[in-house]
Length: 406
Image 1 (cartoon, helix red, strand yellow):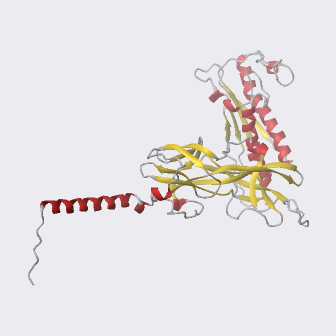
Image 2: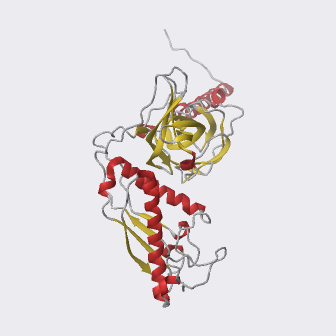
Image 3: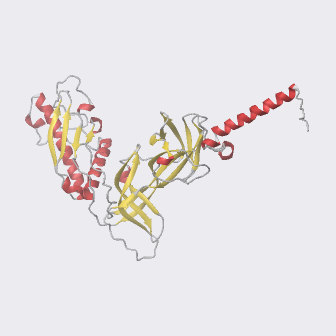
């Protein structure tokens, strides 16, 4: 049988070329979309969800607290969708020893900058009424040390030191606005010293000493432990050129605390489970607070319904007010800086990383997520609960949030 000869007109050839070009375009679109894990926009896009249109900042919407809610679409040049995943913050009962081989976080040297110190000019005793932000810093330090002590580290704090500093400004006996007199111990300004250099040294040393006294009192109330803090001679920058400002008015606290391999067991309060009436059982616990791309252990509570209800994790309202914890709800602004750092409502969630490096497993909604950021601890609700030996405590419930890109 002879070969069949097909004669093509110029119009036929043009039509075939157009079909080949169109097929190649579709394959490229598929490679850039579905093959990279990016879902079909028309299928999954919600009309009320903001679209970043390939930009690195825009709005997101928390329609509900349900896991995997779609909160933004078409983010960055890769056209990612964003969803949110939430789960309970990590916790461990105070009466339960931590897993062997995983030492508790030790206490690092703490530097308190001049901007976070509670002193007016020429004053030496902490004034937490006029300086509430300094009080939040102070409370956080006291809480960290108390957590270490409650975990069994009290007898290891044998060399805690504190050192102050005073900048190059000339000290005076002028009473600052809002006060009636200088608060120097003994009632004599600067302990009777009149030489400016000695007066400046007095400020550096006495401010550190008074700060240490306040810390010891607070820690005693939290732990019933008498902490010894040694006051070292402070740094005196009087008259030195260029040594003026907050950097040269700091206080340095050095706990010198070794890691704890086997925290001492602290008995949890006994709970009466004999009643059939539904109530909330709250037990003190150590919980993980995630923020600014890092995590730390703080005092909190595990709350659960009696007998077999849901479980919640949180902290006291007083503790909550000293921390910076977001409440993700409604419409908020988000952005990705330097191509990797995610911020939501002004809070740094963390760098974007590959999902294989995530500490938890995420539900698969449509296609597997490619990148994640988090966790970041967020506030979800609050409730008054009765804590044995503590009375009624308003507990702020918390969850960890992860932001996922598809």
